Image 1 (tube, rainbow, N blue to C red):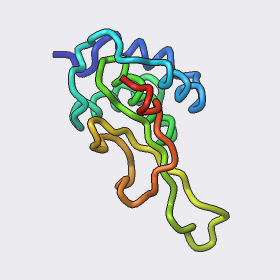
Image 2 (tube, helix red, strand yellow; image 1 turned 45 degrees about the horizontal axis):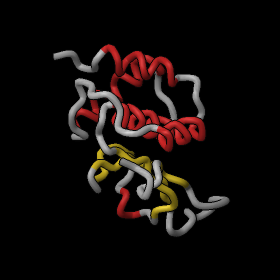
Image 3 (cartoon, rainbow, N blue to C red; image 1 turned 135 degrees about the horizontal axis):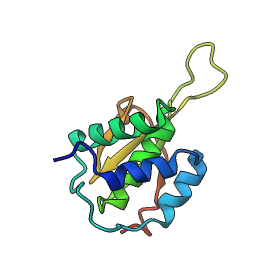
Image 4 (cartoon, rainbow, N blue to C red; image 1 turned 120 degrees about the vertical axis):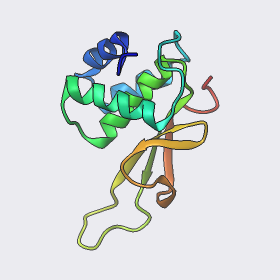
Amino acid sequence: MALVSPSMLWLFWRLRALSVPELAARLDSCAAGRPEPVRDGSRRTVRRLRLGQRLLNGFTGPVRECAVIALALRRAGVPAFLVFGCEPVPAPGADGRRVMAWVEVRGAAVAGFRPPYLYPELARYPDPAGAS
C-alpha cells in the first residue's frame, strides 16, 4: 500500500497556492466526496497525509496545514472538521491571544499542535448544521 495515494498527492499539489480563507471556503462547499484509499481519520492516516503535504509543499503554518488535512479527509469521505480556538488568557507580553487550529474526526482531535481541550472553540468548518 502506498504511503499516500497519487490522487491525494495531486490534491495537495493543487491546494498549495490557496490561502487559509480559501481552504475554509472549500471545506464549506465540500461534501463527503468520492471514496479514496483513505478510509478512516486515524492519527496514522493523518500523519501520512501530513507527510505527503510536507513533501510536496514544504513546511507551512499549522493553521494552513490543518486546513489542507481537513479538506483531504473530507474529499476522501471522512467527516472531518477544521476547528479554530484561541488561548483563554493572553500570554505575558503578548499583544493578544494566539489562534490555534486542529482537525476533528467523530469528535476526537486527530491533527493539531496543541491539546484542543485547553482552548475555547471559536469556529468550525464546515458548519456542522450543513455538514454531511
